[in-house]
Length: 429
Image 1 (tube, helix red, strand yellow):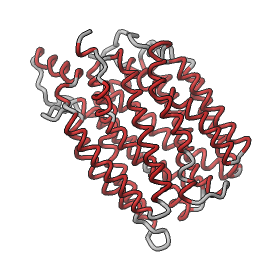
Image 2 (image 1 turned 90 degrees about the vertical axis):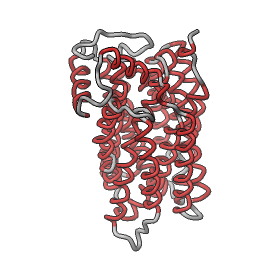
Image 3 (image 1 turned 45 degrees about the vertical axis):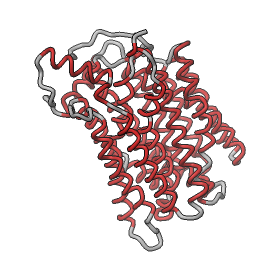
Image 4 (image 1 turned 120 degrees about the vertical axis):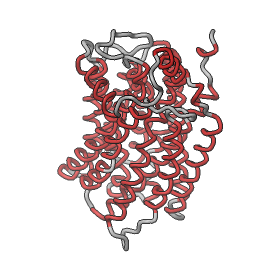
């Protein structure tokens, strides 16, 4: 086996540190910021609205930055420069969010810190994902992204543990600890990830050299994005369109859950702030246990079937929580849901990568993947939040399950995305 075809486990863990630090920050953010917002607003729908509106920053910036990084050429690579700048800035605003006191600070100051934090995170979030296919050949991408999801799960667990231990002591201390860990992860990445050696990056540079093209960016950030959308729309096979719609729908459910459940846990279950922000750890635990097995299973039976099964399990978990509405039964539901979501989240983006018509567009398609996620992050909490306000605070998990079922229907129309599937590109180089 050629050295480039070997799956390098150590490198995969180094690459995934960017995803790890992302998930640490977002987990604590989702666990505590909704509770602070609820203290100001007193409405599930309005909490969902503000949690969604700050995600609009991501929906604008991440796809553009994916395309920009595709066309970046530096001695540090095309993804790492954005990670190196974005992480420290986001860490600063992350800590500032925790300093807000609803009893004395104006609401606009909280929103300002949230928006700046989201801007900084959006400028490098897509690049942390795109690094993996840059270094990994298609046959190993299921395993590579499984490692990413393992590390994402670990980041989530670390954040939940710190939330449980440190939030009762000091909210600022909890956020500061995560911020320091983010910077440590960045330093390790800078020391261990040499992007100039990336398999795809080398291919791009060699192709540009052979054709005599300049290595600087020759197209605007919107051009590659628009052309990719055209390709998805006019492709005879609609697998890319179907899975992007499915990703949007099940992330509507996921973000409605993560944005609103801490409020539900305080409001309906009567839990204190620390435990309320920690209950989702049980979903994360099964997620982390199944992340790597999901990648291995996909190499044996394919990627599409496990995603469909995962969506069924995700739905069952939500319905168990809705029917019984006790902490114990909700935990059982979260365990089942996490098992299913491990298959869904590990394999969906890998299916999408297999539908990329040219390696030059990997970052752009990763940006489009995040576009679908952020659309879900915007619409899910708002729709589910206001439905919960209308029909009662006990209906949260029921409305969450509706989006997962719709995502499952979309997956029935995904016909390609297994390793080696190829469609002749229409009008893309």
